Amino acid sequence: MKQITAFLDPTEGSGGGGNVWGSIVDNIQHCKVAVVLCTATYGRETNHFYDTRGELAQLVRRRKPMVLVKMCDRFDKEYAASALEGLEYVEWAVGAPLPDRLVASIERELKDGR
Image (cartoon, rainbow, N blue to C red):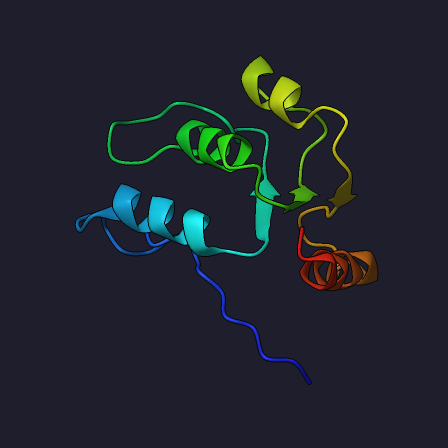
């Protein structure tokens, strides 16, 4: 079995603090594939410490391979909808089991090494 490392959003459960944005930018720069969990609010500008609009801009600017996990019917912000338009995604409804296709998509992106 191939071992991979993952970077999880450091704001989750942290209560803030630290250089969150620097950590995110560093990890985007060094990742092979970004797995992006997109809720309705993805791409929203929220604060100067961290927001998913900046994260999305970094991913697009760096042309990082992405596996998009769409967890909503539509995005609240047109910015996210237009930046992600035309990209392949895997739907995963809240409370539903992990889609088999999601793991296959991540494996394919890692193998392709784009």
